[in-house]
Image 1: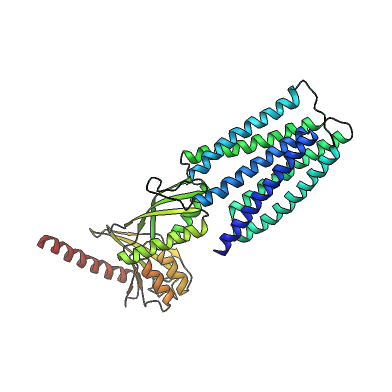
Image 2: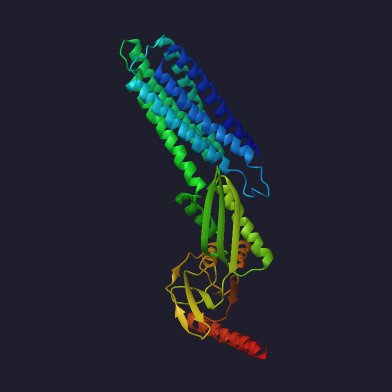
Length: 401
């Protein structure tokens, strides 16, 4: 809550700064007659528009109704498209006045215009540096993006100052500076327009965000596979839908797992409004067993095994042995590895002593099978016989029904 308040204060500070710069530049552009200064005022207005839209979207985020169950976030994008059209028109008018006007514009008091621009440059430089530090401290991509916009304003102001200095010394550089700043304006307009159109068409989340979400989901040992993932943006907010294949658990435990995954995604991906997760249990078609072994294929426990061999046993008792995995003779390491390789049973000399390891295995739906057998072949035969008995009992119950 404290971090959220700080983010809102920085966003409001950016809005007030852009408002002040826009008014100041516009007033002195009219007073001095500088076309470059007028272009810079419009450029500041584009930053102001972005700040206002972001601030308003925060206020609209809480307003939902039966008619708009997903909120009014896209109002932000509609407004941004209208503003982008205005920016294109303004840039065109500035270039037209600079190079196609019959009257040569006369700039009055260039030294005063230079002073105003230097003051605005100092303000944008200081605020952008401070906001970047705050964005990194608060882990806020929105503030970081805003700081970069203000820094772009600082760079365009540098061009205007160079043009005004040229005017002061008798060189008519004002219109060239205005043309260059117009390119900045068109770039801002294009970014706002393309972003707004993409969101109105339900653009997907970025590839980096999709990849990060996949990493978060697969970190959880209960997840077997992501069947489907869909995400979209609306305004500054994101909506996510997941279809997961999970190990078999009780309904209570499954709900807990899904809630943990959703909370982790919300913590690491900014501006997630809602996450819908549909989950299905793994279909049990056969049995996958992991055996904890040493180099000579003797059965070991979690703290002494150096190899893990997995075996798939089908319902018709066909056996397929998979290539061995290396592990460290460390209980926690081996337990975590077993919990992530999608097995039903792990065969060991003893149960793990660590509660953390037992908990990891339990969450992954892995049963620990203690055996007195000494080698891999004997332990495998023991599992096959038990599996054969289980299938026979299961089939007989089906026939009775």
